[in-house]
Length: 91
Image (cartoon, rainbow, N blue to C red; front, side, top):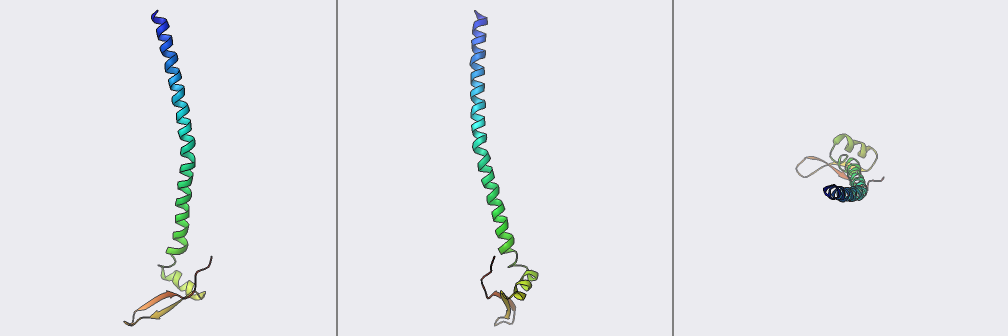
């Protein structure tokens, strides 16, 4: 009789483990697209940073933008050399 109980308990354990495996697969199916979306967001943020933020803070890039006609150097009231956009940046 104890053999029957052991086999029944093993069958139940097997069913529970199969159920856990199925729920783990569902979690992985949901986790994959979520992580891909996060990765796309990070890449998009990096692209925006490299195209907009870095050129506006580096004098080498500022000089290149001035050469292309998108900005100008000027002196303010205190005599400091400043830089400003004179045209909207294009893609």
